[in-house]
Image 1 (cartoon, rainbow, N blue to C red):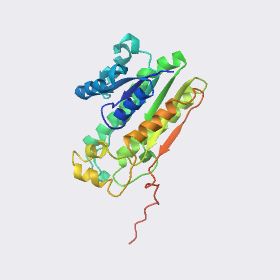
Image 2: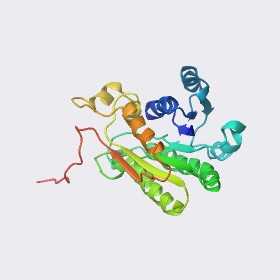
Image 3: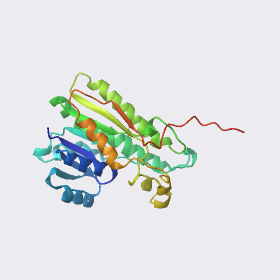
Image 4: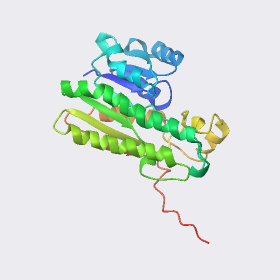
Length: 250
């Protein structure tokens, strides 16, 4: 069955890869993001199966108005992929920028909450739908400099599980998608303020996951039989694993 899928952060990285994969799967995509020019380019590439929708998930009023702002033929959103998110900085907490902390919480936590609150009631009313929240392995495995980014993704994971608890007995599904090391996106460039050299060093000597790999995972959970719910899906490349606890010796 062809689905109408709304993807936030759809102009780069996971979001763009998901949009392409979902269209290839035969679905329609509402591509939501801040950069209108990139949205238009995505539509030019993928055609009428894509509806570009300029949206900043930190704009609470715009998010609340979203369901009524969509064209009538696109208002029944079957799947919401809360993909918009970012990490800023890798300094230890006592040296980190408070503005960076606030920005991560605004996008990763508040933006995701507001998007869910805007679209979930109609899914429950129709007794059909799927919320896919993009979390991270950082939600479970801490690392130096991860502080607020990891904490924000822990929120995403726990929020997802609690949504599922609220929705038990309905046909609305919730999946928490937790990628590990993924290269070839803007993620680390954004984290390091545009420093491409430093961003590239994160992936030196590795074979990381790609955005297409994450789109593959999202496609799989969305296209499962409607009575099946994948609660959590943690994905790492073979070069990565959870590490031992840190011990500082004198």
